[in-house]
Amino acid sequence: MELEKARKKLAEAGSVAILTGAGVSAESGVPTFRGEGGLWRNYRAEELATPDAFERNPSLVWEWYDWRRGILAPLKPNPGHFAIAGMEKKFDNFLLITQNVDGLHAKAGSRKMVELHGNIWKVRCLADGKVSDNHETPLKTLPPRCECGSMLRPHIVWFGESLDAGVIEAAFSAARDCEVFIVAGTSSLVQPAASLAGIAKESGAYVIEINPEATPVSGMVDASIRGKSGEVLPLLV
Ligand code: BJW
Image (tube, rainbow, N blue to C red; front, side):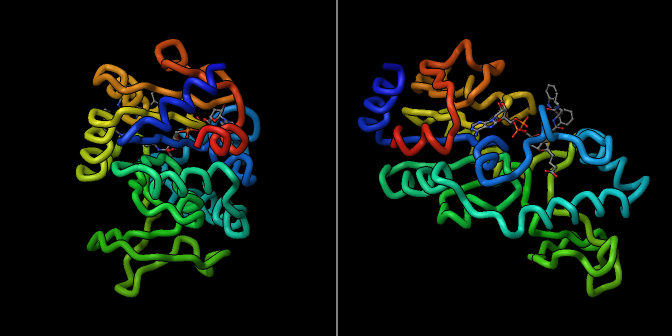
């Protein structure tokens, strides 16, 4: 019933934005951050994904990223990613806002997209800030070095770091302007991404949440669809 109403709202919409989180990649085999399987050698993401952790021990942090890149490299997008990629052809005004750094949305064909927290397949030179693609798995040297000799870091937004200003502006403006806002596969705990659904709602959008579990935004959305995004999204679109 809720799914039917959400389907109808979406079919009538001219402008749509969708926020995705780790849960959208779960059915591809990507571990989520929180909940079961969210630990690496007894470290939580919050202990490793910080500028302080990198400053203290860049090799340890790079080891974690190298391990994750090894898991991600062979993985393929799932029906949820493909349903989202299909949406950008369907709606005149569309933006995918992802917190995911795994690159699976792009693999599925999504182009109208902003990556709020960066991309695990990109590295940044600590000396001049130059960003480049890097798909080497496993990395030959840890920590990896730039051609200029300086250390590289993952091109990822860590806790306490600011998100790219252009990216965040695009995300907030899409949330403010869309008729339908979908929030899928995120625990809605990490800011500023977690505010987007509320902003969309306050601006008059119909908000749909897709998640097997309740989250802090479940109480305020128009349709809370409890299910896996790889199953629900293809039915919704
Ligand atoms: C399924 C499923 C299936 C499972 N289908 N669903 C305001 C108030 C309070 C704190 C702050 C604030 N503003 C900023 C902060 C600090 C901080 C923050 O939010 N902390 C909170 C923990 C409280 N934010 C920041 O530091 C951000 N920077 C910033 O705002 O700068 C300005 C500023 C700085 C300092 C102070 C004030 C302002 C930066 C945040 C960067 C987040 N980076 C990470 C790590 C990237 C590293 C990496 O990947 O290597 O990004 S954290 C980690 O969490 C990752 C994710 O993108 C992010 C969100 O996680 P997500 O995607 O929601 O995953 P999970 O695991 O939490 O949830 C999965 C969900 O899927 C679950 O709900 C499942 O049920 C569901 N699910 N299977 C559908 N099949």
